[in-house]
Image (cartoon, rainbow, N blue to C red; front, side):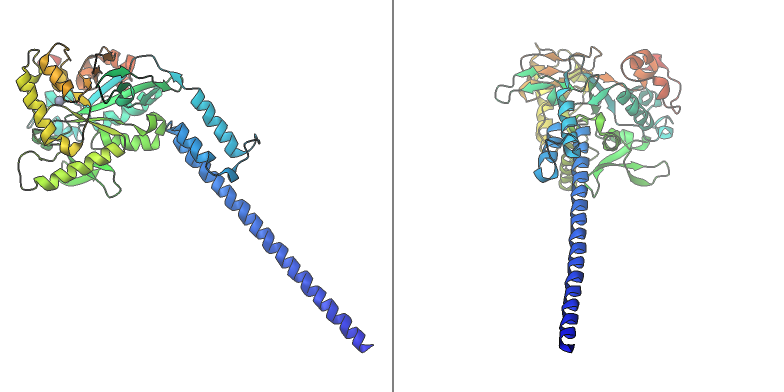
Length: 424
Ligand SMILES: [Zn+2]
């Protein structure tokens, strides 16, 4: 009897152990399942967020690739599946792009005035010139959301035309944008930080920060040198697009134009100074960083000399200028098909000097004019540009308002009264 009882007790004990073990196993398995589901949800959220970022910048195909990459994360037959929903949303947005057939706006600036109190103090370079041809950093920042409200999207100039690499022939290229949106090209002239501007409240040069971003080196009115992200158009626009990706077609920003007679981007790389080699490397780094963040680089002539704008400029003068840019600047900023004419001179197809510009590989020519229409010649596209500076904003506010923004919301109070008669 005792033995039987003992055996019974042992059996019960065993059973209890099995039950406890099973219970633990169920709990552990459950925890794994929950964790697995949680981990899956986490991956789904991440994939959707990544695709959403691409979609906002109009990278529809990349967004779709991200969503479709891991087939285990979605069920294409389930309409309520969040990944499937996102795929459908992006496919719809892509299908809804419409062919744009209006003007292609191209506006331009010079390097921005960071400290108006220095630019307009009339010490050094006359305030009148700065007041007419320059824009302040504060004005530039204010106009960006207004341009965005008007439906503009920064668009790459090399995507409005097709350049045949073999023949050099240039043809218009179709532009597809979301309904109601308009392409906008922005360029900045003379990104050289010339000596005469240095004491007048402009940036002194461009630099690349430790994260590979382009920044500006600016001297404060107190004489302190600072690295900033609002010392010129480029870092301001880079930051704006980071926060407002919808303002830029696939991350594109604009065109930075450089001359050569005082180097490029604030580095005197053409004077044979002791630091020339070091500076050339800097210019290369800056160019790489600019291109990476959506900027093109353009030739704005080497000398920026007045004779270049003459209708009868000789082939010899033009050749000498272009060849100098090609040999002294291009090796450091990289090849480009874009020429931004100094003084905004117009392209004349009959001029042998202008032919030389195109024959040197510049198939995109950007003069200044408010006709707002792209022209196509055999092997060159002409993209006329409108200046958005003090002159335009103060003398033609209606035009600025009609096409871009309300001048009253932008114009800097720090500007002195404008005497248009004195501007040549
Ligand atoms: Zn210029």
